[in-house]
Image 1: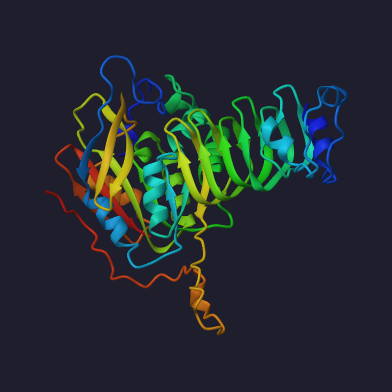
Image 2: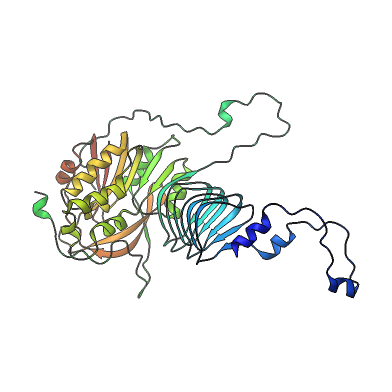
Amino acid sequence: MWNKRKEEEYPPKPASAPAPTASQAKENVPVSTNPTPSHSTTDSRGPAIIGKSVMIKGQIFSREDLTIDGEIDGSVELHEHRLTVGPNGKLQAGVKAREVVVLGTIHGNVEASDKIDIRKDAKLVGDIKTARIVIEDGAYFKGSIDIARPEISKPAAAPAQPKPASAVSTVSNAVPAPAAATAGDSSR
Amino acid sequence: MLKDRLRSDPFSPSLHSQPKKSGAPAQAQTRSSHGLDQFFSSLQDQEGLSILDFSGASQANISFITSMGHRIYSNDVLRTMEEAFGSGGEFVANQSDPERAATFLRESLDFPERSFDGALVWDTLQFLAPPLLQDTVDRLCRILRPQSSLLAFFHAEEKAQTAPLYTYRIVESKIMSLTPRDQVRPVQYFNNRNLEKLFQKYHSVKFFLTRDHLREVIVRR
């Protein structure tokens, strides 16, 4: 279950070699003395999962990929990881993640630093801020989409001078006054 | 009078249904659009504008508008209409219900803090009956910034019993793709005089009548 995994994940495990099991000792299997990376078990078991019968009210922070197929009322943050909202997932929550894949329902604003993928039959009501978006036909979306453009990186050899303000993409709402449009009919 | 021309026949089938899957698949057709061209010309050489799109979320429209450096607000207004007024024979009558009308306006045009630099309303307005239609047009006028443009389509073939309901997708700045969703009976048909009256609070109205009986209208706020 998810809670159990969370307990395993926080706080981080000390980087020490696991004690050899009795069976390993009996079989005289060579064991490395190098510390085993603490995340190796995390990678093999896949993302953490909140099952469809689970309902959580509150804030969720995760330092690994997370799949939510239950109901969340609050907020979800996985800044460097991927959030997948399963087909049964219902989020009434603000979401921040590197990548967000939606197959279920989200009511709330979504900020995905890399990509958001809204699949067929998914429903998302809220404002999106992301670098890339993929939306399949059949998905329902209501809200604004703001594409965050990555800042243009300067060449390494560039002289160390104060960067001009123009290096940052700017948003201007100034609308030049156009010539008055012609009222009337124009048909062909 | 617009009201006299109101068609109150049963309004079915579903407004926001996906293209029919039975039989031959719905074929998208592409064609050029003077209205779309004028709309995007008004946005030329600008970035960071906010565009309201009533067609519902689509990859094509989102990619096109955001690639121009603009922000898009997407809403499937036909679906909102159906949620507010139902999809059966009471669709038109229900628009007279103040509570339902208020729900529709709140769900589709409630932007107290925002204003837009352009609106793509496509053919959605022709499914609204007065006085809700006028309320919607006036609300659009309020949330649009001065000098901004609104693009709307109205079916112009008055003798036809039904009009095709399309899903509109932007292909290029002057080319759009139309995928048939259904045949529906518009609530009313408009001529140029009706439309000028409808948009009388706006600065100007410009019409393009196409060969496929679609009246394209560019309205300047």
